[in-house]
Image (cartoon, rainbow, N blue to C red; front, top):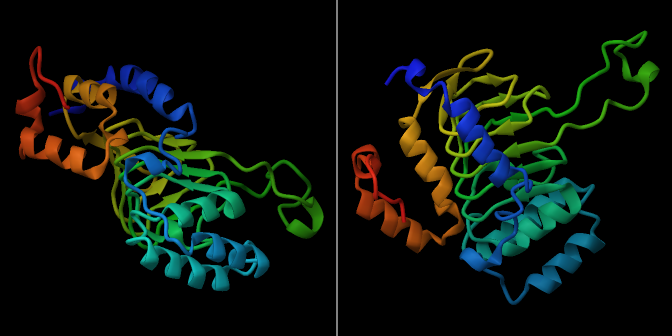
Length: 250
């Protein structure tokens, strides 16, 4: 598959991603309806998080989040951890997503992450800059930083080791893969594979027809049992399974 075969995916897939991500991944965030778990100790642990001021004391917060995740089946399934990170740190994480995003303070505020997303160790997000048009770039002189940029990371995204996402990127589309060590300076379309410094699109995971069907299916709104059943039915090569009229994801 060559890149020229998928040029239309920029407009078609991005328009679909506007639908799914334009809600700021609201269908994914803290959604207890698709398999998240809550411990009977959740109210007590949430009170401890507030009383101990874990919004600022991130090391203590990390200990509590770790305890919560253990009680609720791990970070992939923890409802309470997601609620705390959303309320106190402005980081919204969808069901089944995992990685260092569950460390309080690891990601900056105003980051939304969809469902089933894989975030490797060392991934960093920078969503604000020193101003470049003032007298100085030094914080003693310019005061507050510029406004934070909202970063929306879609569903089923894979961010490799040590990926750095800079303020020029507002959105990483559903199904995208960003290779290890890449520096992301602009938006990544759905189902693109991007690598390098700065990150450039190497190719797309699937042909345009398959990408469109995956986006339209919104399979990531299903629980892991339903998603796994779809995976088993489609087999190892979903391109052959989804090419042609009448072929559906779910």
